[in-house]
Length: 342
Image (tube, rainbow, N blue to C red; front, top):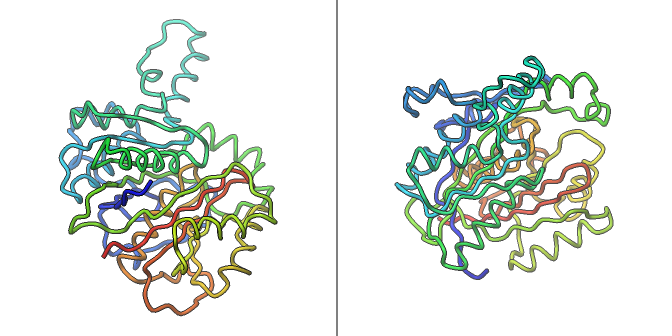
């Protein structure tokens, strides 16, 4: 894939005050609870009031961030809409399953079922825009967003599109959260960041504009990497995309036993590189790496690393290249490298 892939805009709804907020770095809040819902905006100014009451949280978050990303990039109609989600529309799925039990599988309303499919958000964005172009949803656990990005890269390299709306989105479901906290399986393994949710959409394009934030230099995913392989895999990745220096590395530390992979990187290859964590402010969810990418773009844009996420306080002059590394329980590894387009 030789074609340059620009990221021309980014929009975020998260557990932090990130939506349309240029002062986010001054307003970061560390939540030590076990769950942290998204801080949602007032949708009345974003979505037609007639439709809001029928939309689930994940749909509203998706449409709001998608519209914001399009507006920032001055795009009216994207050539494709590609979304990634690990868990899909949990609230509607739970609502439908509850209805099955309570009504003993009789006289069921199909609405919640229709709106519970994983591609609901992408479909609703398309309906809202009246967009009949390519529309795809990837559902692959913690690399769902990464696969959406890879698909957008492929489309751009094959000249199938110029401007693509791509995003990662997940929501907290009450039943899932209750069961997780009741069993505490993950927390017994040491997770010390909240379970959370969020929606992050980006415009990736083959065209550089005045709004271009960064170049997506490379992205790579692996199912499993041993502790002995991680350094070599990172080195090969950087060599393949011809990057000799990383100005900041963003890591998905969450406190569990699998953080050892990140420690190998921070103690060796990147010990003299500014190190950043993000799940302590975003929380843990399947597509949290989309928040990590959004944060990386903010670092490049603002040329500043907030103290709340700064791990090692290594001095830096300029942040041009940012490497995002994420993994889930020793599987589903991803590397994303962005470079300033300014």
